[in-house]
Image (cartoon, rainbow, N blue to C red; front, top):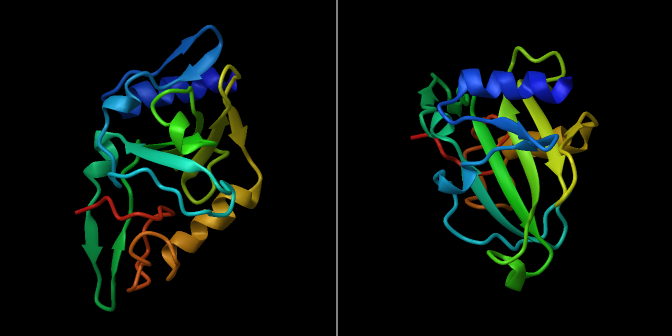
Length: 168
């Protein structure tokens, strides 16, 4: 029931169709989406450990804007933004094996959303599981502070819980 509701919301909010196939949560077109970081990420990070990651974001996410405020700038991702992170155990698996997926969906209206985001984890061959514990969001909160990942968020800009700046 919960998966079906999320899928209906995604169809409504994004230009990409999401569907339920064989009782599996799928985002079939995500590999055609743009990548906010055009590289295989291999820096060990909390929650993902020593893994190799590729990040994809739907067009809605890339249409988000930087909002200039008096004292600093901030990014608030558009409703319907979807971020998909492929995770591989070995670099040689990238592009050759089915990855694990970590999925973030900006849906402030979802009663399970934490700070506007709903998190999912999907292991190969398994159903997606909504992640309701604070581990994911606790780490992603750090994206809004200065941190060691990507450009380091030197200005401490609010980035709507993403470690990479994809808004222009």
